[in-house]
Image (cartoon, rainbow, N blue to C red; front, side, top):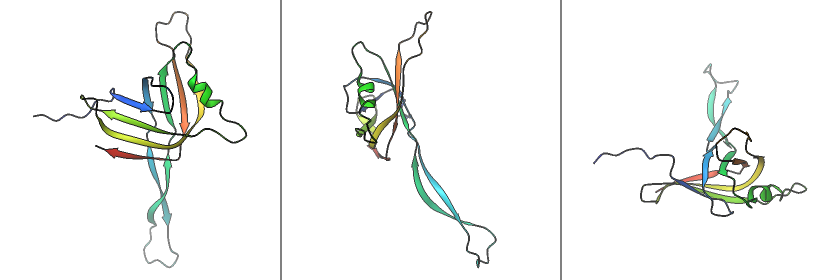
Length: 143
């Protein structure tokens, strides 16, 4: 039996809001910054590299706009005097049996940018809104 990589189009996002499908999730990037160090008395003429701070990019969620649905904007409006409603997110990549194969557990996410749709009189596309989230890291669970 042949084994193939998973397609990217079958996923679910649990974000603390209503159960609406997202069209896109991007920014699931994890980076470890390298620290360069050289002791002045070292006989080697190069630097030593070691792992430093972890860095996580902002995550962007995109979804179609529905009549009467304003949940992204309501979440952004929780920002007041350096306080914000933080949420844990769960992003699951699903297999053909709708079971999670990889799960990203995002910690303490909060909105930093919201973008409405591009409106065009001659357009024939679905209105898409997006929200960019800063967070305090994620872990990955492979099933």
